[in-house]
Amino acid sequence: MQDKKDPVFPNFLWIILITLTVVLLIFLFQEKTMTGKVSEDAEIKLINDCGEETIIYNFGNQCWQKSTKPEPAKNWSNAEEYCQNLALANYTDWRLPALDELWPIRNYIKTNSELFKESRFWTSAPHKLEYKNYHAYVDVRTNYKNYAPDFRDSYGVKCIRDNFID
Image (cartoon, one colour):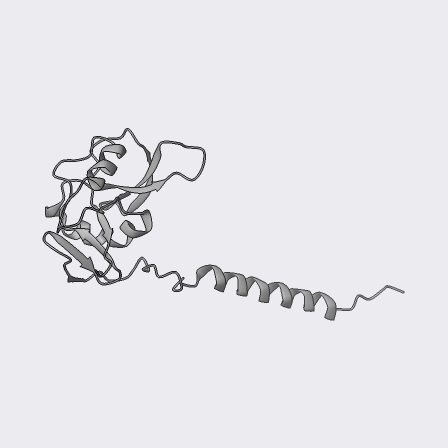
């Protein structure tokens, strides 16, 4: 006589496995709205300025430089130094944007490309692994972000500051 296996037990395991997979997929693909960051598909609207030659986008409290550095940066340090030394709209606390600050406005920069000669823009984000002296950049023409060695030249610079109400 053959041993018959109980078909209920394997079916029960499959149901649990499928349920856990669905829950994991939902968790991984849900939009993170609690972080205060903009979703990548958000429509960018210019809502205000925060002083001469500056702009505030609809999603944040950051004040952006309307134009870019007059000439491309010689390297990442040159880009950082330019923002740190920028005096614009009566403010001197300018900085390079973080990757998650620059990425959402890439389409605005691309569609207003007559304002910008460069397609790649430096960010303040250092490489998180073993590559020292690498920082993130955003290429607005190809919709791409990556890391480059700090000695790379001809990248654009668009400075940002936190727009605290005085």
